Length: 343
Ligand code: SF4
Image (cartoon, rainbow, N blue to C red; front, side, top):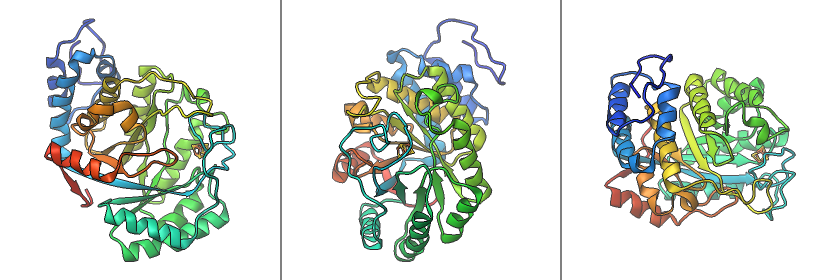
């Protein structure tokens, strides 16, 4: 394959050598953009190329983020009871997984979690509810708690409340929400295989409302849902075009009782190639190793941080993460450092 400087790139050779990744990193560091074909070549690279891919990707990471790692803390403020049918999700109406079911938590519990987030060195407190979109009671609860948290703790707030209209996005901005998470999850083409109760276009529209309201967009996806490598590349290209600020990349945990139970297509090297591809395509944005890190990257978890610069600390929404002390040790062993600085 030869490097191309524009989107009309085509593969000219069936095989690529490991020097390709360094040339690609040089192109990105010189301000060039990775094409679809080049992104695909990373995902389809042999596992033996992973060290070269990470070494090249690290240079991009190092340019924009040095050796810093941002930590995010997830708070499941409302769990279960969701009318949507996202097939990966244990909280959906079609899931039989035994997850806790509760309505939006009281102020005291949300504040206690903020204290925990702050104590664990998190930069961002992610307030998540299971819902198609927030109802009035949930909006009011968020509007009440966000100013309180921000007055007391040095935390950014990311709200993940489902689909939003423009008015709701503006209310979130007005109460101090910094960022909204709404994942694209997969490509437009593959979306109907993952969810039937809302569309990819609905998700894009919510992100546009968030952007128009002046908040940061946090949006990423899930790898391992029987998508093709082309789907992962498409999602990355759409996220680049939207101008998202933060990209959480999840690795499917096929939870028993969900329609996606039993799917097991991931390997640690496949996860690393996906993380690296996002770093090459969207070089200067926060890239977060998200759900499924412990299960799918396993002993290669630290290597993910050579390209990603962010991760969750603590538990995920309905699955356990490794203890915060183990995460801190991993970061220290890499010679990296936790940052709470706004990039
Ligand atoms: S909208 Fe969110 S909580 Fe509801 S099923 Fe989909 S992912 Fe799960």
